[in-house]
Amino acid sequence: MTGAKPAPERDDASAGRPAHTAADPATSPWRPPRGPVVCLGETMAAMAPAPSHSLDDAESLCVAVAGAESNVAMYLADLGRPVSWLSAVGDDALGRRVRSTVARAGVDVSGVRTDPARPTGLLLKDPGAGGTRVHYYRAGSAASALGPDLLDDERIGGAALLHLTGVTPALSPSCRALVERALHTPPERRAHAVSFDVNHRPALWPPDTAATVLRELADRADIAFVGLDEAQDLWGADLNAGDVRRLLSRPRVLVVKDGGRGATAFTEHGECTVPALPTEVVEPVGAGDAFAAGFLAGLCEDADLTRALRLGHLTAASALKVVGDHGPLPDEGTVEAMLALAEQDWGQAPMS
Image (cartoon, rainbow, N blue to C red; front, side, top):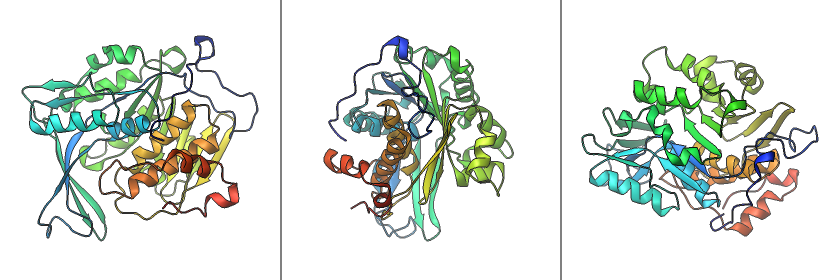
């Protein structure tokens, strides 16, 4: 909801404590304290053909930006949350474009480093009948040289929530050390909550390494996101959402997304499932990041789990309808009306 105002800050005494006492998992999730969000990770320049074209026959390409963490940051800004993005870009035209695009969305980019020796990463999207293939040109990029020292940034020191994804530890040993340090402190001793989206990108990982690393990292987070399909690819083809919860038992909130069918949030009190909305899909890449932003925005504003999951679906639908990763949200009135629908009406309400 562009222009929405952040809710008042929660005082320190209530930070990290449940906002409700009921045992209903839909109304009593653990919540992060209120305050700024920091999203940390690489964003690249992205090139893609127009819809219905592939790289083989396209005569022109559209230039945009693409990065899981900055996608989350931009949608959080759309939803009225104070948010910063931390990363590094090259001292080049693509880096300037990345920085300015994210800044225009209302995200604080003052902590983004400029690396004079390394380039900004690049990706090419190649849509086809079997889905969209993504070709990365990011080896040796500016962001791949990030390391644990980035966690000393003052913005993280003042954050209520730090959002990371499984893309970052795949980029380089120093990036993996960064994420491991961010998740090293036990949850009860952290100065801020940590959100982690598994976001498995097989092309970035050496063979037979992603499954163990991503499970260990996700299980240390306060809030974890994973797609059921990627969980099945990583940890077992026959897994269902409940099985994933047993594998990732430590996060205070675990969200298992099941594509166009729905999403389930697990907490210490149980689980809550909300079906996805019927939506025309122009391009699926970026929808998971949008979902994470919507859910986090809902959770941070004291929404119950049903409302937070619905806001995740609404935000994801905005990404599904555009070629790029960041699409416009419906107006605030439409969003509020959708969130207020009766359960039997929700799954029948198409996103126009």
